[in-house]
Image (cartoon, rainbow, N blue to C red; front, side, top):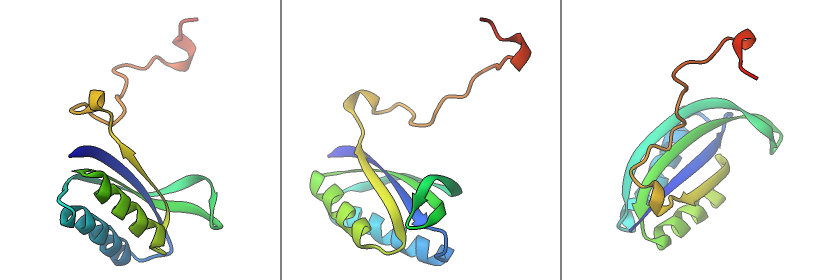
Length: 118
């Protein structure tokens, strides 16, 4: 079993219930292939860096799962065929990063703009 992380950008014109249904169906594919689903973070609507299919906003979801490469391939095929998905990316988590948080660390203290050292 290998750890993976998937980032999915859904079309914002699609209703929330349709997004949930497609996401659940994708997670079910992982479970059916013998994998386990970890955390699922719904980031919500965000502005895209560039237009995708003439859309400027997307609904972001990040999910972690463990499974065999076949599960990742099946999930990839499902998201390619799903009309609600604008873009997705499945990444294998490196062995060195297992157990470490994938969230960016926030600075303990940030200096005001005038007090920065040069």
